[in-house]
Image (tube, rainbow, N blue to C red; front, side, top):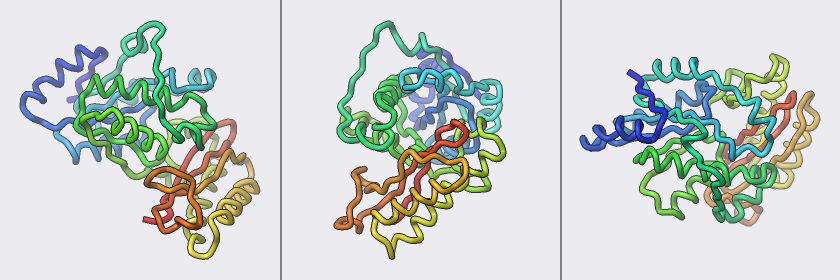
Length: 282
């Protein structure tokens, strides 16, 4: 049965018996509006640990657009039902007041991770992400935390923070879950019309084409072709398309294309910002 804690004290009371018994705790942080991608993370966490904690918290500090924060869906009753069906053990569902005091300050040096792609186009976003995740990690004290590949740059930011702060947990990257047409599962997808969803499916098709073309084209040529294909697709506005090294998240070059590569993109469809990525080489 799903147990729900709305405060850090109540969460600790639920977790203490598990800790005393030596059970491993896995953590899945979310902002709610759960979908099959989130449930896949919960299922993956169940395979890695004895107890699974999922959090639902729409974190205000990681939104650089107040309108986006206001529009973010919050179907908590449905979310609870999905977690119960997935046999999640504990839901941590705190308020903003529970998570933040007045005039809190947070600034973490994230190096170039904060100056490229998502960091460049969403100033302050990763400061908010690291701020809230540090709070959540301190509240849950998990052995493992699971993150989806769709937010790959976020995963690299969390990896950086965990290593830099020497936090005693392992982070696990879980595969992207997709809708039947290939669109990456996202809580934002519900804001798309049926036509918009069909238009957005072009992104995954272009990513797959980029992977297929990798052996015979330059990296610059791949990015140029992908950007043009997306620009020519109805209803899509491209924000970026780039190829990076998957290990250290630096821009890829021809001289180092033997290293693991990942293509990443952000597009706009019907006023909704969508991101996706695909590993091009192992």
